[in-house]
Amino acid sequence: MSTGTLLAIIIPVVVVVALLAVAITLLVNRRRHLQERFGPEYERTIEGADSRLAGERELRSRERRHDALDIKPLPSSSRERYSRDWAGVQEEFVDRPEEAVHDADRLVTSLMHERGYPTEGFEQQLRDLSVEHSRTMEHYRAAHEVDALGTAHRATTEQLRGAMVHYRALFDELLADGGGGARHARA
Image (cartoon, rainbow, N blue to C red):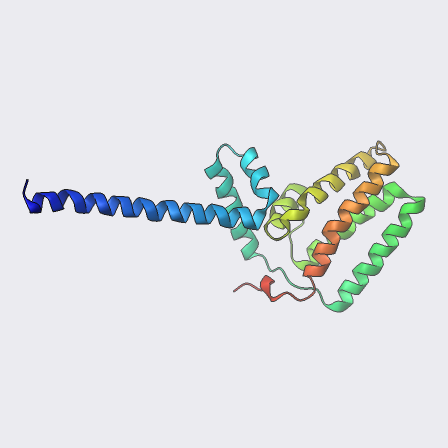
């Protein structure tokens, strides 16, 4: 075999191997980025998808939608108002626990709306929040589930108390992130 023929075989093989290495590296980096950004929500989404690639496509779609939102920090007067409103909801829990849980849900939804998150439905709220607040999504799911039980008057006081704790986790995170993070300003 001549040197020219050998080179004609080896060069394309090397190019293909290099392209495969680059593609695999990009895939691994993209997956790592999604895992870090979405935390436990990554695995939950992958498990609920038809395939890993479909789940990752869904997560990237969430990122694009989130990036298009106008998520803004709250002025200090709004943070103070929400803190007072939360204190009122907690006080209400003593005498009217079901109503307090409903009010906690409405307060979290109001805070989300003021920050710039769409509030058109619970599942969409979860998807939108999961991009920046993935670690509190289980809290939000659990609280919402108990809120639904409370609406049917089937929640125990302990479940309602737990819902308040869960709502508080997301509330605190949304309120803290509303304190002026430039990371929310997107070009």
